[in-house]
Image (tube, rainbow, N blue to C red; front, side, top):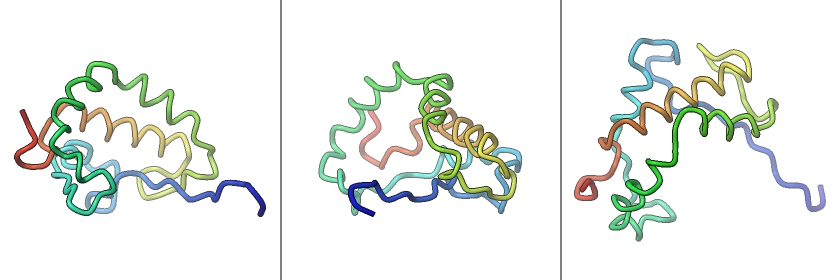
Length: 112
């Protein structure tokens, strides 16, 4: 055990209707509001709109794909609609890109 980091499975964003392939799943995920009330960074929610504005300009699908390529295959557990590590990565890219396109997920009162 020693100093090795603990490995946890990385599951795709919340499944919608049990399938990542269901039409509109990424968009529905993107529209789900995020509740910062019990999040470790919740006390910084007032700065989310400004932080979102700065980071959004730097992110796109290629950045998400590059980051997800760094996640070891064994951390990416298969789920319906994404049975391989490559499919799980692709699902994450789709879900994150959809979230990048909307501000609906930001908590009420945070959207500029």
